[in-house]
Amino acid sequence: MSKVKDAYKEIEGIIGSDFISDKDFMKAAYSRNVDPAFPDRWADIIVRPESTEEVSEIVKIANKYKIPIVPRGGGADLVGGSVSEGGILMDLTRMNRIIEIDEINYYCEVECGITWGALLSELQGQGLTTGVLGPGSGYSATIGGGLSNSTAGFGSTKYGVIPDICLGVEVVLPNPQGTIIRTGAAANKYAKPFCRYGVAPDFTGLFMGDVGTMGIKTKAFLRLHPETPFKAQRNYMLKKNDYNKVSELLYKLRKEIRDGLHDVLVIPVIVVQLLAGMVENKPVKRPRLKGPVFSILVESTDERVLDIYLEQIENLMKDDARPFEWQEIDPEEPLSKDWEFNLKYAYHYFNKFISVAPPKISCTTCHKVPISALPKVANLSNQFDINYRDEFPSQSIALFATVIFLLPNGNCVVVGGFNADNIDEQREKSMNMWHKKLRLQVRYGGVHYWLGEAISQSIVEANAYTPEFIQFFKDMKKVVDPNYLLSPKKFHMYSYDYDITQNIIKNEE
Ligand SMILES: Cc1cc2nc3c(=O)[nH]c(=O)nc-3n(C[C@H](O)[C@H](O)[C@H](O)COP(=O)(O)OP(=O)(O)OC[C@H]3O[C@@H](n4cnc5c(N)ncnc54)[C@H](O)[C@@H]3O)c2cc1C
Image (cartoon, rainbow, N blue to C red):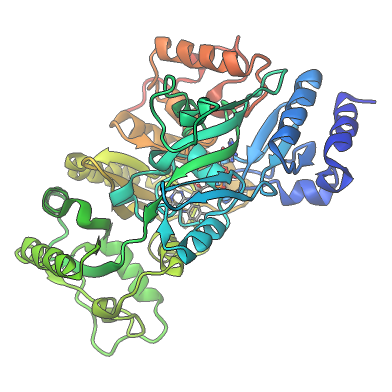
């Protein structure tokens, strides 16, 4: 019997035959993420453990037979992170329990396979929130995926990215012992998991944004907040298509409104035009679309304070922008004054503003930049698209940004990419251009976050890491994963002996 068959038998003995499969239809079902540039990739075995102990046992067996493992949550990754060519694909979505919601001390303990949709629906009923509400894919994306991808989402302008709300994790290390550890306050076996720092060095950070390379997260301890009762939204359209102005206004909003800002999205004029073109029942009057739209959401515990925020924003925007209503392009949209926040809104903004040409989100290049760098990176990005126009796959639309999303501390996310189709003839072209554009962004100092395979490899290709950092990364991984089994290929790391610098692309503008 092959080692895969032997491992299958042993894992079956642990989790039962209903939760392991090597059938073709299962492999096919798990062969993709939302990333058309990649080909289908079939794992050898799909497993669906139900507990931390089962994960640990599977890890021991994988080590015994030296079979790689890739963890998977909701599989809503956009960059090839949660599929596996061969080896074991570990679907964690059966680990979906809420273990504790502590409404007095404002934290919760959950299993990492629970979706944002399920957790937030439960919290909402209790008047609680995690603040940042997970990604646009949150109905099906999991807490584990969000922590592993350093996900940004609705609420990130105020509450930061998902690792910012993490107080610690329970992790199964990919070592031969399948060691289980807890980080944050929970590293003190007598303590409740109510805070992150203090008991030991911040080992939680080792597993944040690791795209499943350092350990398999089985439980997470998350910060909670009481739901803020008053929220309002206002939209403004800039009078000119001027990214110096965008940068200046983002700075002023952050400086003056501070904690009142729940979300600030800037939707480029090209995207508004595309959205206007997609509306079925167009308005009688043709819209005048001159510049990007600022969509600003504020919150407060006091309605009077909310009114002050809205007045401040009006004053801040009035010289450079005019109030804008989505009704100008779509008569069926509500007016800002009638807008109400709900989870449906939080999860649909992605489909509305980001995936402007459905179903063609792909080759995503979302990354963070300091807000002062916006004009420069807009220019570089547009220039790249012009220079390499002929090298993009046919009919693809490349956009500098489908949305700019303000984050805390003066940085913002530039959400963008270009569309590719799931067609074999286009795959090489799409993949080449994708990596090339990512390298440009890395070299102008952009910081990506959902790294998966495509982006983590592009960072290496762009020669971003110093030799010392690469060595440190390898040394840290070797401590937790001596047989190099967890998520191989990410960061162009194929083994500890492999010299990843041979993947550096030199002599590129
Ligand atoms: C429509 C749509 C909207 C999106 N909106 C956003 C957005 O607003 N913001 C954003 O940041 N991203 C967004 N994304 C990208 C993606 O959905 C998110 O990054 C999301 O957090 C991934 O969660 P998941 O559970 O689907 O993870 P998966 O795709 O299953 O996995 C993501 C990565 O994490 C690893 N992983 C998963 N679970 C674990 C675990 N328990 N332990 C260790 N490693 C693990 C995987 O190996 C993989 O590398 C969007 C994607 C789509 C399709």
